[in-house]
Structures are given as C-alpha cells and as structure tokens.
Image 1: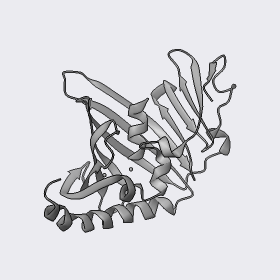
Image 2: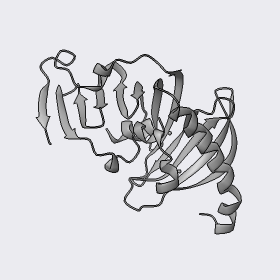
Image 3: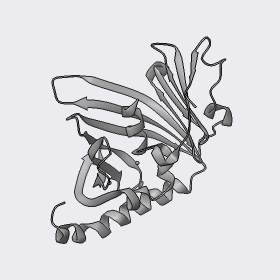
Length: 216
C-alpha cells in the first residue's frame, strides 16, 4: 500500500549550500509551473506504472488514479488494491483478502498523497534541486531531485521528471531507506475528466461481501 501512496504524488523534493543556492530557484520555478497547472484543474485521471528495481526481484504494477479537488482514488490493475479518500474518510480495499480497512483521513499524515499536488508541499517538507534534462518516452524533461527535511520519512530521495512542454510529471524514481528503489511513470493524462463523486466513497455494491475493518 505504501508503494501506491508514494506513486500518487508524484501522481507529484546536499551538496554544498552554495551549489544548492545556484539551482534552487530554477527547480522552484519548474515545480511552481507544474503545480499551478494541476491546481487549476477541476479533476484529473492518469494511468501509472510502478517498478521495483534491483535485488534481482522483478515487480511491476500498473493502475489508474483519479483526483477531484482534495478527493482521490487509486486503482491497481484488476482492482487488486483500491484506495479511496474523500478527505474525511479513507478506505483501502485488498482483493486478496476481500477486506477493506477504514480510517479517518488525516492530510497531515499523508506523506505523498495525490491531494498534496494541490499545494506547494515541496516548499514546506523538502529540499530540492535541478538535476538536468532527460529524455523519457521521447519527451524532453526537467529532472528535479527532492529530499525530505524530516528524518521520519520512509524514503531518502524522490526524483520528478517534468515534461518541459506540458508542465506535467511523467515519471521518476523513489529511493527508500530499506534499500528499495522504485521507478514510476505517469501517462494518458486526462485533465478535467468527468468523475462522479460516488467514486470517492466505498460502495458495498462495488465490492460485494468485503469484510469491513473499521479502525476509526
């Protein structure tokens, strides 16, 4: 589940202090432009993939996320895992056990939720620097490296690749403290996609027979 939450940010962070000062402003301008574009949308739908790198393990997941205001929904392929958050309550459904865990939504505890794409979270929680250009799927992208200011994060660094033309995040990597590295990509952006509010509330009809574990 943490892997899914990590990617949705990103469906969206030291060298010497002098080196950072030379690159911070450019990184901030790129992040601000991308953030502004997303903030002006009424809703968004995008596909994503998440791949574990290294350790001789092959693990790749794909899915789709939906966002409308501060509400969001993440669906892994074949709905193996579905995360729904309406900014008041959060539901996590796991197909393998046919159960759903229910908790009270707490934005302050969400490390990298899609809702944070609506704020300049990077100014408050991350140091960031410009890391150059990279070609991803034929697109020329600005690469930004973000490192968390707080030591309690599960990861040490997040990389964002932002399409220079569209100002949208198209991919990057996440480095976890446990040694895992994940590569993610975002594709098939559909801005202002028509999304029913019902998608952001758990429904017994959608997940019949699911065992509800209420942790509120």
